[in-house]
Image (cartoon, rainbow, N blue to C red):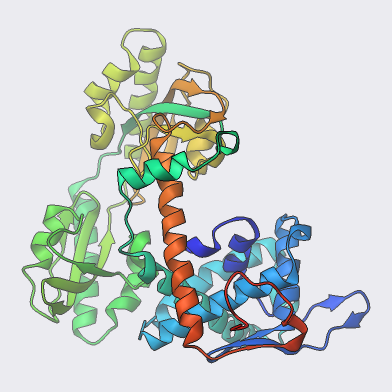
Amino acid sequence: MKLFLKNTLLTVLAVIGFVNVHAQESTKKRIDGIVGVVGNYVVLDSDIDNAFIQAKATGYDTSKYTRCEILGTLLENRLFSHQAIQDSIVILDEEINSRMDSQIDRMVEQAGSVDNVVKYYNKKSYEEFREYFFDIMKENELASRMQEKLIKEVSITPEEIRQFYNKIPKDSLPIVGDELELAEIVMKPLITKEERQAVIDKLNEIRQDVLDGSSFAGKVYMYSEDKASLQTGGFYNVDKKTQFVKEFKDVAFSLKEGEISKPFETEYGYHIIQLEKIVGKNLELRHIVMSPKPSQEALDKAKKDLDDLRIRILNKEITFSDAARQYSQQKDTKQSGGILTDRTGETRFELNKMEDRVLYSMISNLKVGEISATTLVNDASNKQQYQIVQVTNKIPQHAADFSNDYMKIRGVALKSKQNEVIGKWISETVDDTYIYINEDYQKCTFKSNWLKN
């Protein structure tokens, strides 16, 4: 999460990796040159050009940004990457390759072919392009990890949130768009013993391969269904207070250094754990999780059961909330009558900012009290299930209110505090880092003291 590069164009810059495409302006080609140096990292004039090109292609109004502002952002990214190396932050090549494969797949989808992507980046071959793009992605990942390290311990108190809100002029309060309150009912397909055993057998096979010398991290990229840890090769740093399910921690804390667990089950599927190192009360480990896949027959039955229940609700034979309590197979929402919350515990979903596009498509055109069609969705652990959703309330667009929009205000206040921490760190670190700014940019007014005036 690139908090310091979060908004508008800065998000694009973080995503595109400050790509170094040899672009043309009208009919003449720019002579590329170094415009900045941070430690061992450089910023080229073409980096700034291509940041504008990529942002404009993504739909951003680039007229709002100057070359000086873009250079400042690029310098920040280089500083994070440089310091990550100094702090011995390690990123595995397998991790970058896995992420790069996903990114290239998206590029190919947009460009139409691999050849078009290679041509766009002015490379002679796909292999040359991968080598070039690998370095870009690794630099950005180092920058991201450094920022995550800086804000890891940043927290905010209710009093700080209140003070943050009170400092905002009343006529400048952020506008919260239309919000919906939602409830769900979930039906999950039945998994047979044979389907469960097939997963256990596969995990045992993977375990034996690792014992015979294969890379555990490599197996993570091939098989694990935990998207949250895929980028780190299944790595987690765990202690007794880590918010993992009990079964997972029980197995983790029973292992010795270097040991690999046998397959075990949690609500997320079947796991194996490799304990790499014990550091005080912390465990450095990797894990793979796989879940059994239901048959088409089981999926069809789950859909029919939920379709039948939906008809009963529409016929007013049972209320949605009572049906959720009696029949829903989603334990996190069952007892509340199906009430949905986001990851912060907020019950209101701002319609135009919903991250779950499947859920958005299910409810965006519904009125209060209406129920979506029965839809096949994937849960947080990528398991298939059927879901219906009811819109229980709609809150029209309004200026942010401290009581009613507390969680949203908390998020903005926390991000502001995190940015202050990062800004202070940049100011202090710039003083101790070699910085060079080309004379063409010496008159820029930077947010940070890159000129060391």
